[in-house]
Length: 289
Image (cartoon, rainbow, N blue to C red):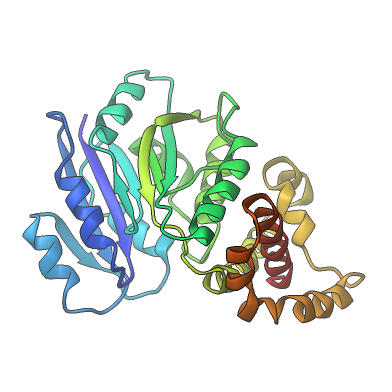
C-alpha cells in the first residue's frame, strides 16, 4: 500500500520539527508527504521543498478545508493525517501499516503524547488523556482526532471528506459519520506523535471559547438522537433561552481568569491545579455557545 501524509499548516513555528520527524520514518514503506499552507509566508514553501515533499496552498482559512485540498492531491491508498505542531515517532508509519493488514479495519487513530514545556501544557495533556479514555476502549471508534489518524481512501469515497465549513470539531464529526456508516476505525496507543500543547492558559481559554462555538455548528447539523449517541458531551454546552443568563455569569467568572490563570496554575499543587484547570476550561467552553 502507498500512504499519503497530509499536513495543514498556518504559519506554525513547529513545522520544521514535524517535517524533520517525517524525514526520519523507518521502514521501506511507500509514502508521500503533502503540506497545505493555509497562510501566506515566505519560509514554508522553501522548507517543504528542501525535504522534497509536496507543497500547495489553500487560500480559504480552515484546517479541514486545507485537509480536503490535500486529499485532492494524494495518490495513495491510505490517507494519513497529523498536525504541523506534531512530531511523529520513527515507527509511526510501520504501526499504521501493521494495523491495516486487516482488511476489516477502515482506519486507525493513535496516541498523541504531550511535549511538557510548561505546567499548562502538562495539565492539558492530562485532560486530553482523560477525554480519550472515555471512547478509545470501544472496538470501533465513534470519533477521531486528526492529530494522529490514518484512513483508507475508500472511507472518503463512501462518506465524503471533512466538512469544509467547520473550524473546529470536523475530525470528531468525520469519525461519527464513519461509525454511523458501519466503518471500523480502531485505536493503537503505540502509534505515537508528540504534540506541542498550549504553553499559556490564557491562549488555551480563548481557543476553548472558539472551539465550542464551532462545536455548536455540529449540534445544529444533526437531530438530537444523533447528538446524544455521538456527541452527548456537547449538549452540556448548548445555549438555550432558559440558560442564556448563565452566559453572562460565565463571562464574569472567566474574564479575570484570562489574566490570573497562568499564575494560579503555577502556584497551586498539581492535583489542585488540575482541578482549577478543568474548571476554567469548562467555563470557557460554556462561553463559546
